[in-house]
Image 1 (cartoon, rainbow, N blue to C red):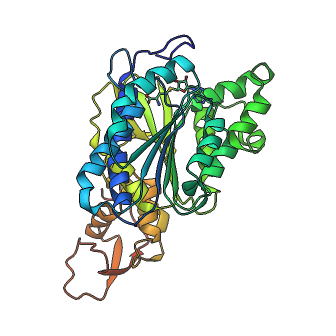
Image 2 (cartoon, rainbow, N blue to C red):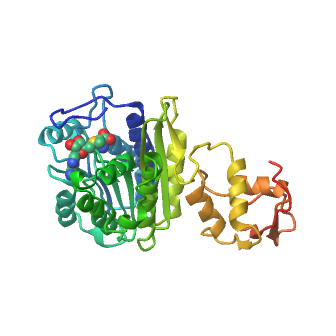
Length: 384
Ligand SMILES: C[S@@+](CC[C@H](N)C(=O)[O-])C[C@H]1O[C@@H](n2cnc3c(N)ncnc32)[C@H](O)[C@@H]1O
């Protein structure tokens, strides 16, 4: 259910609650890893569309979820915490929702090591104010994570998103309303489509991207694809993954798009997604494959075939952690690495593993053990 402008709170659908839980699970790992890895760096988390922090049927929203994650990470890390202060900022444009949120998060102000900032304004202006209050993460290598969760397709111009992702250690999670983008495209001038789509994508590439004869569901996927392409075109943003949220009827679709410069970010986001039970009233699917399939974290076989197709006939380096095979697994499959898929391929005799370790057992892909993987050409149909 979507809220009317006048509602302070509204009812959360199961997928909304799942989104909040995913965010919290991810942030515990994020704060903990970054809080214990590099001394004195400032950590900044931003919720750009914070909402009232309360639903009619659920006690909290994304602000308390993030602050609970911060509290847990600080508590778990204790003496190992070497970073500087952990800053959490919340931007909400509607005054009554803002006031509700400020009241709800009040108890978290007591946590030592945590600085809370709130802005009753829109996303773009809130970020500008925050940038002058906590400048380091916007300019240097200090970590910045921005959660962008608007209603509908507008409110987060791509120029702003690009700007956030130029800093060295920044990541975003955006709720992309691809249906909304599709509707704006179809409504043309009556929706002021030229201005809105140019703001959403940051330029006019969309004019030659969409095909107006295409059925609406394909149009929406195309809208998503252009968005992920745009994210990948930002320097060093090499890890972009779209999780599709569907209702059990398949009616609902919006995408949680994650973008990062570091593989560990995407590994941890996939772990957070995996941890959240899908209860039947919603499901995540992997939006990056052209045939939408349910995200089966437990079934590597179909992805093994795709992995083989991708590299067939090539010998691919597997020495460094940042290798082509692992990056393919991260960006184009639901898995965190390629190991399960490689096990299947080796069993089927479809790859040859190059190793200097004479004791290596077939089906093991320990880091440092495997020098390269040769993907043999297939002469018959796959046997799995
Ligand atoms: C989908 S809700 C946010 C839900 C919240 N992130 C959660 O998970 O609990 C979007 C919120 O953004 C607010 N909003 C709308 N336009 C905005 C803008 N341009 N800048 C900041 N907030 C905005 C709305 O009032 C609404 O409360």
